[in-house]
Length: 424
Image (cartoon, rainbow, N blue to C red; front, side, top):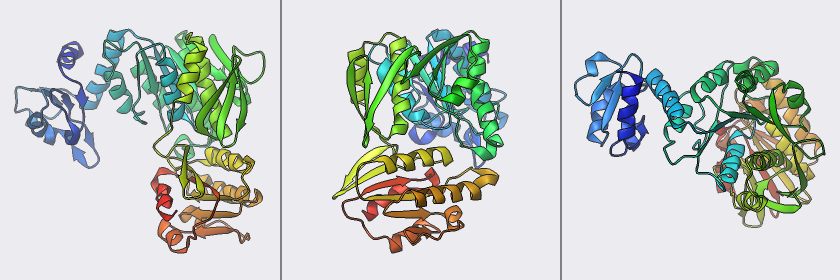
């Protein structure tokens, strides 16, 4: 079956599903395969649960007139997404980076939604499956697409660009994330820069933070739009304070966000700059930023009794961990605690990076620091205010609830440190 024919079937459907557990009536089911499952085996179940049509890639399962057989289901999904993207002919902005991708994506989407009907990546569905699903969630009402792209190896962003074919690009930063897969920090820069190269090679527009020296050094593009706290950029946005919520001055007005920490200032500034580029009115930009409430364990400010919790437990790497600790240190509150979990996918430098976070935590004079996980358990420590536990259960058994403190909770997703909230 041609992609054009498959696209006609898709347009007659109610959307796309890759999971029979949440399929909806009239959807087009793609029987993807994984290490521990074969979607082909669930095609009949998908029809029973309401699917109108199924795409499979194994002949022995081709037992129904509502099935179509392709060489590879994943490839068909990706090609369909690209065909649909070109069919819609809408502007698409893609973003990637080591830290802040999802928050920045959501901020850009809410700002642009003040002027356009925007479809953006849901959650962090930002890989070789998530990007196609995002594109296929766009419809004739969509006026603008915002697509988040994630990667932990080189050439992944390049591949995602060929699927989404973005008109605009933005890289949040280059940080020490997924060092193992990228082969070190230089590999991170090279991998994330694949978006910049695509934008440049295709004569598209690229946004960047002019206050980021490394980013400014790497950005060599034909068409750019910059933002900065200083004069000389296309858009000037200034941070008033972050204690703990970020307050900004832009175009003569103050904007009070619900985001924590100076590290989120750049995420907000990027959304403001992109809004300005697309001629969103300043009052509308202010409205969008001030009404955005973070969720999903990302920079959430939570009250627990008389304690204030900064919950940032969705992800962690050496760069984001340092930024969170520096931010906690700069807060005006008197009593501060840090509860930190292992950073995953750090590779050969794991011991060095975890020791560095321990040493930084020790130097910032917090009242208490709790380090949790096997990697942190291996660090060398001589500070009595730093408590080290090999896992969450060990922390739980020894944890003493603080009183009237500001508490940072941060770690990689697999550590599930949001469980600390139950201890408070």
